[in-house]
Image 1 (cartoon, rainbow, N blue to C red):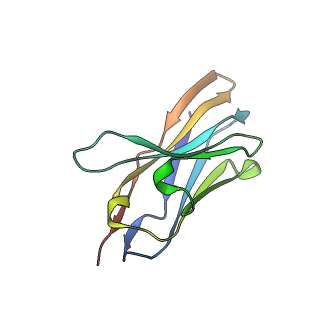
Image 2: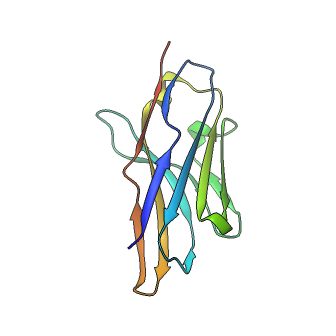
Length: 120
């Protein structure tokens, strides 16, 4: 079985920074695209950023120039560096691995989420 474990959330003032981590645990053969999504209270879950196994990235317009996604393939870990945080970035942030392959086959996985609160 595979688990995605997020960490790094918390309370930060507007203009501050946080770095989220998402580690995939298990006997993993490969992971293709990893991504970060977020869900604010009363809103639908939305894409924040994606990164492929070869390092290509994509980000939502709302976080361009402020958030950076990266990954360490050897550690099966993805990161989200969040700078210049705004109150509207407040949400539960979820990690997703689009296709994780193990000896049992390939499927997608989600983490349980980490709360980011931007407030003074």
